[in-house]
Image 1 (tube, protein in one colour):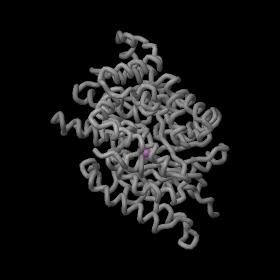
Image 2: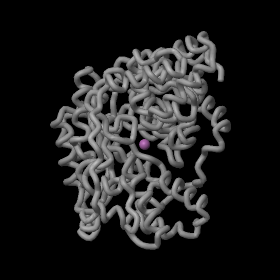
Image 3: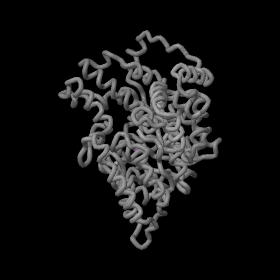
Image 4: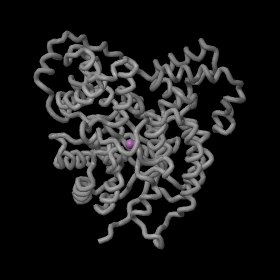
Length: 467
Ligand code: CO
């Protein structure tokens, strides 16, 4: 029996370029094809997320909100989608509800329609408020399960979690398989059951890293999935996703294909032509990487750790490190490895290997993870590790009372003392300052080097802004 064809989300502007060229694509390299992308007939374009926001300010000297404004201007019929790290928003720590609500209000106002909201521990309490705020804005709150494999992450676990996500008000559900772990038949069974148990649409997001994605996406279609994420062919596969054109060819016969393949080819050619500019950010993987299937270490995480070992002239310890990560993961109750838990587990693994003794040095974030500061751990924590951390005399962080008004006056002070235009009255600029204080300060200082007309140009859109 033929299943209903899933709609397609194009991810090249966010996850495609994040996975292949470390999120370095500049807005000016996107602009030429935005009108074409809008014509394709995608259900949505994923355009924004934690890494894109961070990289805009940190590396590209761009205001992430201005980039969004450019998208909004060009996308007349296609919905815009972003990835949100639950209470961490686009950052790495937990934010106050006032910031979460201010952020979501402004993102919705700036054009985001679908908010894919996840928590690295799959703790529902960490995504609840974001879902509520997105619903208040009348946009699509997409609750997310971060897929992983472990003795606690069985099908029953996923079905329960998904039902809870629907019950707290999410308007759709995403299976986010950041490491490409979801096997085709497991995905098929899971999606079949989700479709039976839930009333909300089910989206699938998986990565090609392990070589399973094409088959998993096809089986998901057969199981009746509502939406699949793909990336245009010239920015597909490797650490990224199934190619858009390939997936379309898998599910449509030529004579029934509603997509204009020559339009997609023009888009692919554009991205093909700009890709060499970002050569230095390409990963070293060739073919597929089975480390994730064997060791449960995501490819991206492995390459960062490998680089750290090389910098420390300890590259011969790589195998020890690869072995240590799953052991730590088991000790801390099988947390999925995704931002920020991937960084926390990776850093602790590095300490354990370099010290030659497990948990001799404990990173603060790791202690916080064990102590539940990041949320509820899926499994149980190793008793010995728990005892060790209990014995430490850890002074609790002084609770700093957060207030948006304080942040605003700090930001104003910064602008005045640096003799730059006062940006503190604009909510999106204030959010930049709250979320990435150091990077935002550098960014606003850099604007000072341009004339006022340049700044006006930047606010209007990137076409006028010349670096
Ligand atoms: Co992804």
